Image 1: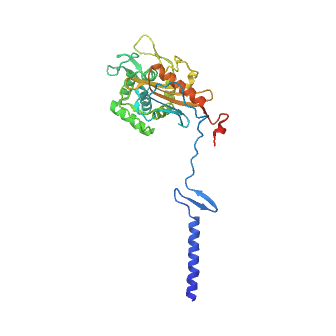
Image 2: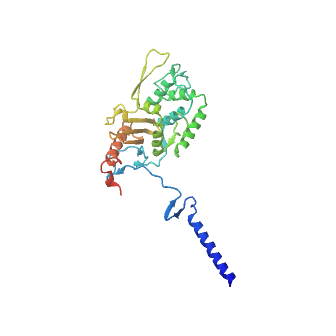
Image 3: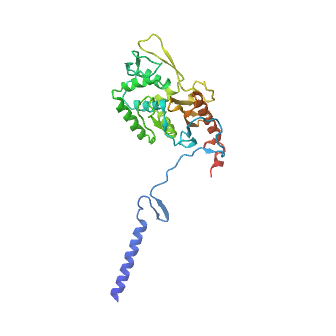
Length: 322
């Protein structure tokens, strides 16, 4: 009998100790357990930025010839408008944004010079074979005037084969998590440079983080200087919102984008626009019917987005939050 009492007493102490140990042990990853009357979270929730919210359920009613289009809030990448955004389409010269990003990853002396070769020439009226330019000059001609020949000369001056450079473009696309993006060459002339509208918006957002890209694509009029020529040469931007050739109410300093066109793509345009309240959106228009349409449709989508949505710092936003 004494042995039985002893065993009962010992087992009660053992199980009480086991319960006590289980109660106070730290939880494994992904589990919640009570600790001292509270709840312990192994992985704390990530705070997300407040996003723009629609004032009502109204839809965009403007003209849209674009095959695909998207508007995203630049800060949070929240989609504000979308049309056929699952389509993966030819980028045309929007490709040059990725080319520019990769060039800035390389140790380039922008003050150095090069002579344009016949191999660089690719249907261009901005530069000619035999002319000498600084690489910085070619950079501006490439992004402002969308010069294919200038891009070819810049890539040649990296000292690597074009195939290797294109491989770096595709590696950068993976690094930036542009899952739909594929690049075949650096100018945009190939219809195999492709991405969907959302990834194109993300590409522009990432590209504009580089000051050299941002300030260049904000330039409406540029003068290149062939070092073995007599006169400077004016280069107009291909972005007609920047020149106001397509009328708009955005300030010049709040417009930054890149155009693209080949027969396979139609008229493309990717642009960052900021309003007077410092809210920034990124608009991508793919396959518009005409040159003017890509700009007017991007403008109209931007104006609709700014009027249809409220941002967290705007009056009335709190009334839209549940």
